[in-house]
Image 1 (cartoon, rainbow, N blue to C red):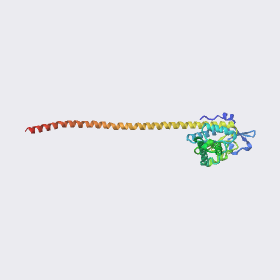
Image 2 (image 1 turned 120 degrees about the horizontal axis):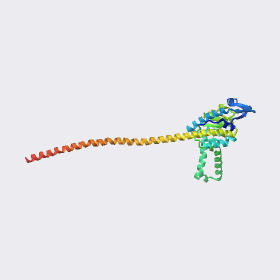
Image 3 (image 1 turned 180 degrees about the vertical axis):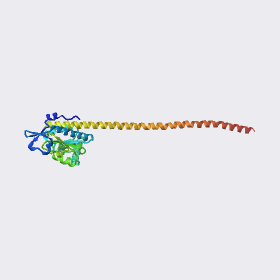
Image 4 (image 1 turned 90 degrees about the vertical axis):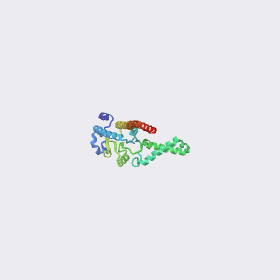
Length: 295
């Protein structure tokens, strides 16, 4: 994947941090300078860290695991949902459901309930319910869709979690840490980078900055998905070739088995010739019999 251009990051406003009085001292290595009471992020370090994170995400996607995107803040919701949908990945843009990762079995039950309601509507059993029951079911379906609709395809725990603003998503960070799920995050100057496995020092408040970082991340994920698809196709071709060769080999063996039979047939021919040779002896025996009878 091509390196991210620092100028593009600068144009997107990725370098703007928070007010100096709100900073987290652990972010000091990623801060370039202070200007008008605001910290400026070192974009060269951002580009390097972004490339590192992107390569790690790509490997996870190639292995067949999902990446869960989390962003519940207003300016990030629409961007995250759009980008995650483009690469067919699960995302949370509404309130984080408590136990989403640590109590995943219960969350899956709620998703199955939503699927069951959809099935009821398709097979006609929904129409047999009373008006009050229909309203209750519709409300439940709407609530489940709002909170869990975006993760309905996630059948197991994600391979990694990508967070926009760790300070705003404290619960998701703690749950991921507890289950040792790799955390990728956009970290601003007011957040703690120690909580994150793959830090991307950047402005996590401006929608333009969020869109720029996510577009790079999603591009890498798409590349990973394409590579995985190509690998699967190659495996399928290889397996089909193996089955063809296996089918051809028995035919060759049958042909080899058939050859000795021909030789046996040839060997039996001399025996027939011997049988013919014995016939004159029988004729001689008959002559001797006739001579004796004459006498």
